[in-house]
Image (cartoon, rainbow, N blue to C red; front, side, top):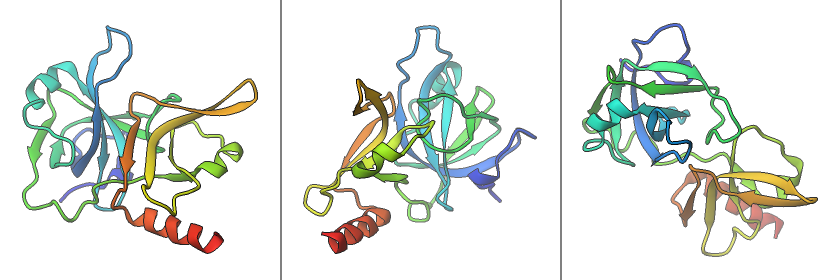
Length: 191
């Protein structure tokens, strides 16, 4: 039996999760950064969180862990998500260490979605203040191509709203994503 991401907390380290790696990137922080990779993990209940992989663990995992694949992950550490550049809204992150076990999950490709976005329309940015980056779609999302600008940070510079990318930013073109279809239908009704 696997734990759901929404149930993770600091009380133990013997968690077992089955997740899809929806994004992975190399952090761009200082050279003494103990983490080799950052991941966004998604489970079958559409919960997601950020995972950090320590250098020693990535040395072992780099040849078997790929974006888009589903894995069973055991024995990791939970910690609080902090900072302005965290890529998702979850308050918990996990750290994969050299004691963590990662195994490819058999026959689980279709039960876990490929992506999860916390969609914000470009027209709504002025009214939002968040401590984590945004997944943004332009207001003209009723025409092709449809873009999702994932993990963008919004800031005001000299009174002007600007979007800036982060280490986790990714641009998706015409994604096959159910929430995107709902947003598009709503925009068509307004147009």
